[in-house]
Image (cartoon, rainbow, N blue to C red; front, side, top):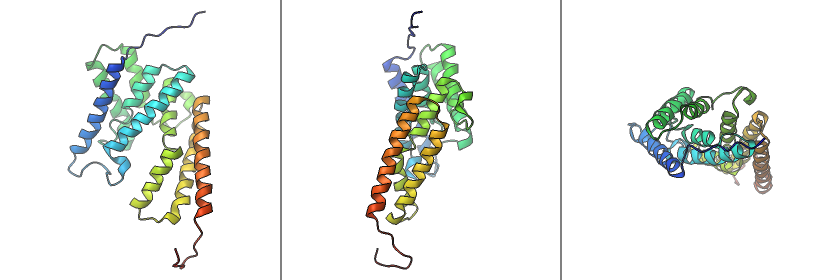
Length: 229
C-alpha cells in the first residue's frame, strides 16, 4: 500500500498572512481597552508575550505533528489561532472565541476545504480540555501537548523568575519559584501521550533541575532576622 500524499491547503504566503493577522488582532485587543489590556501588569499578559507564546506553540506543535503523523496544516493553523482571543475574553471562554475568530478568518480568506476549517476549529475549541488526551483527535492532542511544553523548560523558568519582581519577592525565593516550574512540567508529562512530546518534556525538565541545583548551591540560606543578605 502506497503512502498517501496530502496536498497542503495552506501556502507559505497564506500562513504568513495568518501570522500577521494574529499579531494585529492581539495588539488591537489591548489597544481597545481603557485599562491598557486585561491583566497587563504581568508582561506575559501583553500582546507581545501572547504572540511569542503562540509562535512557540506553532513550532512545537508542528514538530510533534510531523513526527506523530498528524495533519500538520490543521495543527499549525490551530496553534496560530489557539490563544488569539486570550486578551479580550475570560479564560474559560477564550478557546471557543478563538475557534470563532479562526472560522471567520478561514472562510473569508482563501478557499479552504470545509473539512479543514472544521478540524482546525475543533482543535482550537478543545485545546483547554482537562481530561485524558486519548479522548481527543491526534491533531488536538498535538496542540495541547505543545501548549503544555511552552510553559516548562528555560522559557517557563525565565517567566517564573520575572514574576518574582512583580510580586516584590527577593532572589532568595528563586529556588521555590523554579520548583513551581518543575511541578508544572511534571504535571504536563503525566498528561502527555506522544513519544515526541514526552522526549521534549524530559529534556526541558532536565535543564530546569540542573538550574535549580546550581541555584541552590550558590545562594546561602539566611535565617529569619539575619540582616546579612
